[in-house]
Image 1 (spheres, rainbow, N blue to C red):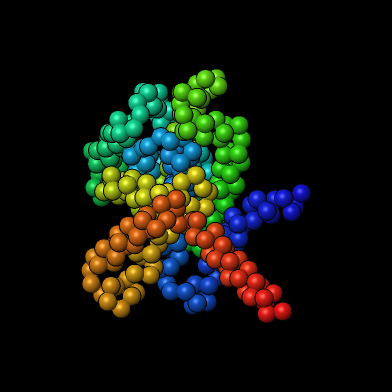
Image 2: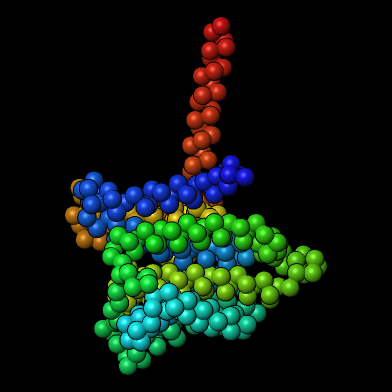
Length: 337
């Protein structure tokens, strides 16, 4: 039983242990100051990308409204905790449920479309949200944005390190949950629908029902990512939740690997982590303003060219190479004997 759990979920647990150790490493001075903030960004965007991967990777549906639902969750959680005085747990639940409910209502209309028409419809919804963030200044503070605090649980106020550990635990839990979901009957129905909607209908699969399921999961993960953003960065403003962010999250799952659980985390590391952690510290690239982002763009193109199925597959390629080298060495030994 334990062996089966480790075989299936071991990689998620190892990832969690590595991430949980980062606050200690930073306090010991073994990693640079600010690295924890960058990895926090990787985590909450990775959670959002994980939900979008269920929609695009496993269902074949595309959405450009991710940033809008992230912003909705961020603003709602900040408002409920800072202005209304709600406990963080209660505000988090409400800030996930309401955007998800709105997402389902939007899905009832927009999911009857497909391809680029669906993408445009979801983009329009995201733009409506962004304009609301700007114009409803009596709630959102307009272009000044809203400030928030680190979360508190049962009267215990978290600091940055504790908040980071909470985000890691949430990430690992969602990866396990998503893994179970994808291997369930619902996940198999989504994969069938992605392969052929006609075949899925012939098998008695209710397309609208399963499309709404995938859309609601993507919306819930996006809202949750926005909540974590608001309480880890401790500020949210309208300009963050734009089309560019939706495209970056889309790039995360394409680069990391569609139809994978680890892929969104790998892609988030490439898109959001490398420009913040590695590129600015390189001798020439880091010294020229904006050059780090250009280099990152080139890196993204190279990844897509050489790993069209996702950078997560590089692990399997390295494993094959090692096995090939070891096998070749053993073959030479046999010949020598």
